Length: 540
View 1 (cartoon, rainbow, N blue to C red):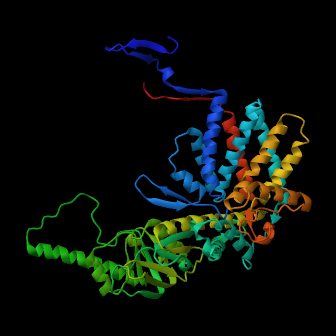
View 2: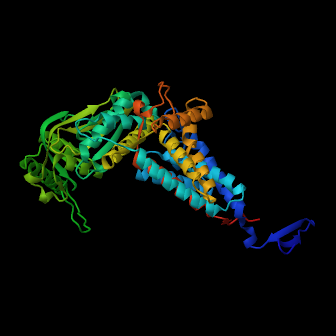
View 3: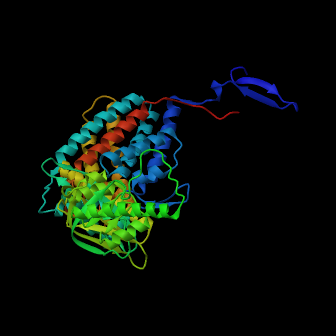
């Protein structure tokens, strides 16, 4: 009994075991710990497997405060899930790192990791040591990546011919809610990236692409603005709704009479003194407005607010103004208009003004919502994607989808090698890894075969989600790839009548595929090396 704890009796004679502190810890070791990890990872992967591919289903996620999100983006689903198990948390981080690095393929990487662990379990049951499995997986991943390099195609990235880029972005958007107008969305994403891309340095600065959304209208009303869209309106309703050939003063200092820096107190005892104070304040503001006008500015963009009296003065002096503009927008406006941000009012001068061809106020339907569009800017490097949609959920999902498409186009600008989607690359790698397995005389042969089987989980899930017979479709695809020696044959998810993904223009970036295999293998290797879990248990 002493091994478990101390046995005592209460006043009614009922036995109670008092445990020592270390015995309160729940402990799993050896194969039990591994089985627990594999089960947790598989359960996360099985949740995401149904969201894979163009016919993948969406998940409705409800946050603790009741906000609803509808999405099939793997990283978003896992981020919003309340995950308790430590290894399941690692799967969430895996998806997040794929999202941060690549922006697309977040669902596939988790499904692949889950399948690798599932196959590893069979090998562990056969008595193969986890380290041998992990090392075998590492070698198999290396072989798969070598094979991907072989079957990859070069891809033309040309400003004058963006059609191939649009087709790639359409592959990414095919599985999203917005797929009914994914041609238009793909075109917008490509135009946005090409507007800000530095093709010589092969780089894209995402900070210059702003994605804004407004409820109302339909998805087809989404547009790309070569300039900046600001969720503000002119400070006074009687100010003109449209300005041409605008010179902008961009102020991050308060547009009001300056306040002393020290603590001060003014005692006003008579009406005359109050009036004198009021007139001083007015004179100060009038002189500030005159100073702005003297520089030649025709629009003041202010980071801070000003009171209604000042607003009326601006109207009288015919100086349109916008107040309470956020920091990121101020920066984008300055970049787009080639203006300089003015942090101290004394520094305002004509050289620091930004210029643009047009500033107009958009109003939406019967609502009072208004937005400002700053267009025809001298520096077209800053662009805004302006999304419309029936409700907030659709707009948020459209933003996530556009982000994925932007990431894919950016990755192609950085590295223009591609492989074919629809499970074609995975099937081709699985065949190459299986072939390699026969040449290995050590135990790693089993790990190679397991790795090949795990790679097939992606085309299997695609076929299942598309309503096809998974095993029949996969075996047919594998047989055709071997006989025709065509690594572009995949799963015909959209029932187009051909399995050739080259003809269907289902394209994925080589960088994304390589990253998926590497990240999934690294995580699985780490999980297979854990043989002991110790967590503080509940008090008994």
